[in-house]
Image (cartoon, rainbow, N blue to C red; front, side, top):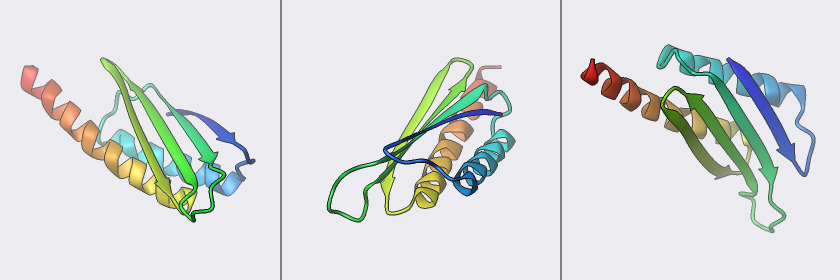
Length: 100
């Protein structure tokens, strides 16, 4: 799957990029028609510890799926986003198979 990654207010290291790609590739098990994923990493300038924001937009036939999570670490955010996307993709696939 093609992944477009943007990091705002910092430079993402290769480990984070590879981790994100690996997690997103696993989504193809649940829905094999994913076109691409746009991933946005942002660091909010706040005094709180949960200042890392991750947004993932999955482009699939019939519309896009967007999730946004705020956590202490980007890896944690990616995990949460992927779990949420996984649930949504399973629902989408069930709906599609029900109509066939």
